[in-house]
Image (tube, rainbow, N blue to C red; front, top):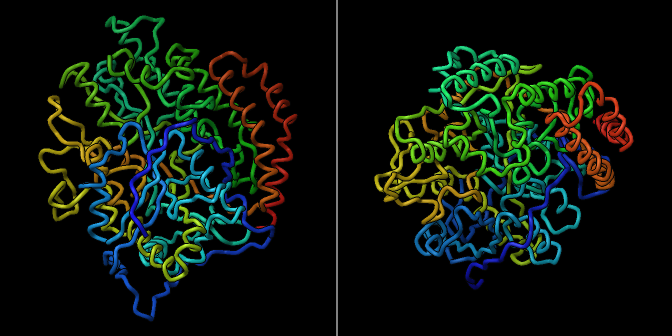
Length: 579
């Protein structure tokens, strides 16, 4: 195959927002109600004949002759693809090790799902399709290979699946025909990502011992702590009584998309409910009742709304949180106008870098909190140990033939599931870009930084960012991994809050898997789309005080009933009964 240049396609719109959000798998490639249990162990199929490439556990995939595979590429505007990625960076190193050239068709990350959907539907799919969160709209047309039929040819994938017992997790993406169509990123164990960062120096001066409180604190105790912090800030003329000390990001029109985003998502999870980024279609398995329920109309959801609203009612949380852009929120925190904000693993270093610019080195202290407790002690991490993943197009099978297709799968197996490729795509080249000690701890070498790994640049901006310059630590690769791999870049403050979450919170159990047929999946989405739009609108009105939770709760519930909430619950009851 002839190597072609990377094609850069301009952004034309927003990415599609999917509302499938099933607690288990959805859709299917065949109209069937047959339920198939995935094997707890996958037996690999080794080729008895000599093949024109080297592969296997602990081995680098290497084709005897140069080969080119097409791949879609999600190009992030904050670290855009540049030619050095191909001439001397990640793609050059992949080619050097494997004899494989990746012919990229690149789309802006904002439009990635829209654009690849059009390509796939038009018969122009790339062979390798990474960065897929929801594959439900692709599987029914026959353009995507049921990859579960072929994982036996992938030794790295099967080794991880077998070693960490991923069968029940993979069951959550399995279709009604017993097959799955996406190679997911798999995790040994989930690590918490989203929490809140605080100005600990201010909290300490306010007399709030957050380290002592956070292990068992409730949202009410958390609110009381914030009130003490605000009182201190007012007394020091850092703000006035009319000001808010919490004005969050990832919740406004830009990131929250009208759902309340991260803040309502993590808060609702502690009340065993779906909201914000995690709203999905609202359905959630209730272990005590042994059935799936529509969580946004439960008493627990009402309690969550009252608690969320209380932060605004008490003058702590800025209602503009749910409309403002992310830059507005972060600038308030960087300038010391607020004392708390959402954070994830990758952002902490960026916060530190920006606050040093704004406030000066040593004039602040950031600390990541353990999230408060609602009606349970669950962590807010997703119970399924899966990440976004990779689809393989039927076009690859048609063009390459079975033998060539299996060869490509073994390259994909190395690229996305081998420990060697994980380290390469995340850290770069060992002893060139990073070093590794006897305990496996990796450190960037002098002269380098990487915002994607939490290593910010210095004040003089003299360090070379290995992501910007060469494409390492990008979002198209290294999904999931072992605990050691996922945490090998974590700076001490981030590692500390992950360790606290593991120690002090319980992992949410996996819900039972259900298997809608394509027709049932269409029914679910037909009901869920207007229903969830209604839930999101009411939720924001309740939280911001535009609607009265006590007086208008019944009105809200009736509006959900009028949008066929019961039909959605009945569909889930029927599906769960079959399992």
